[in-house]
Length: 278
Ligand SMILES: Nc1ncnc2c1ncn2[C@@H]1O[C@H](COP(=O)(O)OP(=O)(O)OP(=O)(O)O)[C@@H](O)[C@H]1O
Ligand SMILES: [Mg+2]
Image 1 (spheres, rainbow, N blue to C red):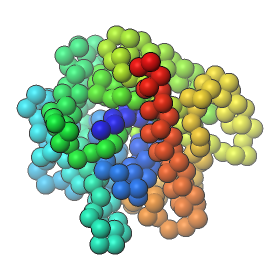
Image 2: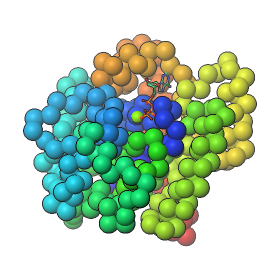
Image 3: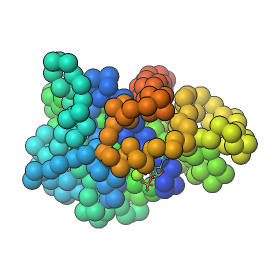
Image 4: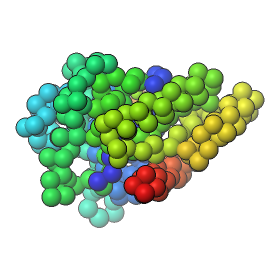
């Protein structure tokens, strides 16, 4: 089970969009996946078209982490209803729902025991490898407070999302430093899975310049491909549809980019993990 946090210090750069794009690619590839919506705004839960029937949200599971039953409280994504599986078994795409309740843990001073709460839930769910997931994607809130740190403690990789703009690039550098510090103190196995540049406008001189700067600064951590600004993005997310099932050329192009990005995240992160283990 690979656990990947999708993080950024800055808000609105596309963490949830990238989480949804990767979840869509994983569904298309038949990779059994769980999305944990750790942002109290619960945008990923909305985008995944979830219809709960009495399950606990992730905030409440975290509160009772030692006894939390993940398997009993995940909800299948509404995306599955339209998934064409041609008689094959339906793939797994579950959601641990977000809610404002998780906000009580988003403090800057969360202690070591609290930081382990999500890791405990996942470890209990995967005892003897029984969790049905190959991939767990954690959509983080836009800060480096308790919830993001709790996500990192439960993860082996962090995928950073950045827009090619001045403050976003600087924010990414600060986040990389924070990951390094966090790794030394709390999570020796944690490695950056890379940085995905989102909302790239191909005709923008500023974006071309910033992308060049990011390449120089971050080297191979800057993942290929980058994700372009896409006009119908909000419409697709508003309809709670996976990009792979949306008609039209631009959605098809974006789907192919997320297929490649998923591949990069899974393989590049693995290479870095091996290097870190040494
Ligand atoms: N590549 C893109 N093209 C066009 N619109 C995009 C793209 N990526 C994200 N958006 C839009 O930008 C807005 C912010 O994106 P998103 O919610 O994914 O960011 P976020 O980092 O998760 O935000 P927050 O920090 O609030 O959680 C959304 O309305 C989304 O539809
Ligand atoms: Mg978000």
